Image (cartoon, rainbow, N blue to C red; front, top):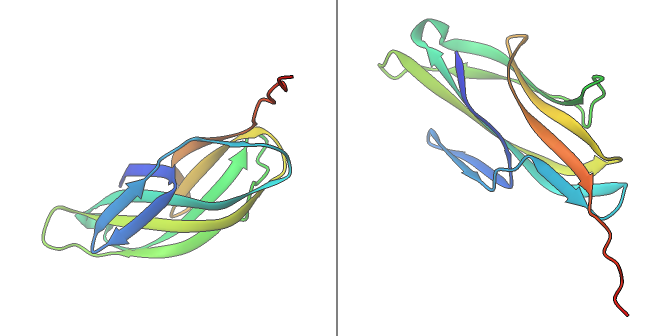
Length: 135
């Protein structure tokens, strides 16, 4: 299998096998901590070879370098069907609502399939620089 796309974004949708991804990003800037990011979407497109068709366990984690989680893991399964070619794709479009951000830091969005890490992408959470007041 090959992960063709893994992205954090403002909007993701799977419509009849077409993956729509809008506003891909790797950083969130907030005014203060704690803060809540109202909507974060995860988009993934994974290509499976014909011999890999069938059910696969899937897990998505947001973890920092020490393994601490930013949010609970998202777990599920995907069933991949072929349509007559030598490979088939599975799309994931997941919404995470009201993600609580407690501190600045660097995290990784990790996609695991069948218990093995297959891809990751960074997420940087930063506090906005304060502006000096003009008199």
